[in-house]
Length: 256
Image 1 (cartoon, rainbow, N blue to C red):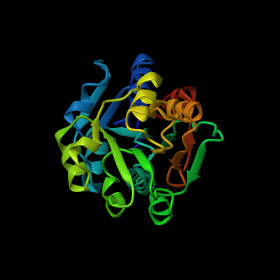
Image 2 (cartoon, rainbow, N blue to C red):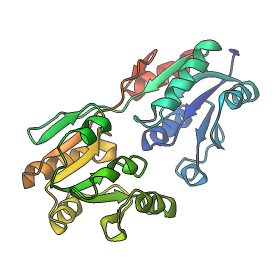
Image 3 (cartoon, one colour):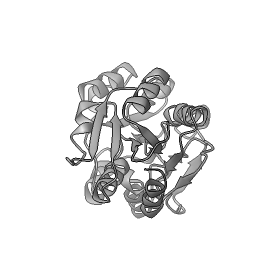
Image 4 (cartoon, one colour):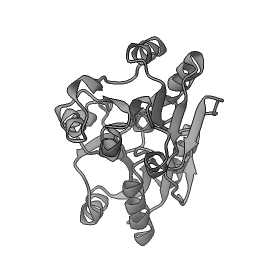
């Protein structure tokens, strides 16, 4: 599938990928960005050398995209916890010999208020939540895992202001008064006020980096003396990865 003047396939859906798309467009490389929702499409710049495709791709869809758009390299900027997507794309890239580069947002230093756990299973099966007033800032998808803790602790969950997110939260056993619909970013003052409003004494989040507000939660946790449990990113071996935009430009120069 390699040829001159090909296009970069950028796997999007994160704020990181928007920055990468802007950078690629600025350097006049041609790229195709794939996102899963129409609302995500609106986040990207309008540029003559930038194309946005909406929809989820299976293996056949990947083949079709790469063939029709003359894809010569792949940049994976999907969410740090979307390991299934990344693994599928890695397998595809290796099978069809298409160069692959993972952009991994930088991890943040850990302070004394932080407890790191390797998975949600470790959290759920331990006694970390017992008789606590807990704020979950992990998105809506893992909320069903906490169903067994609804009668053993007081759980609040912060979700995106979407009907689908609300429905997932209610189905997971959260009452409407314990679901907080807010769209990030959330400033430190608001974060602190929310924790104090509900008398929170434990916060759960994911290692989503600065763009995911991890740094602000860590700062507020230290200020209020509240433990912060961070669920580490799933382990996945990437063929090559970077945290630097400069490496992405070099990658595009080499393969586009």
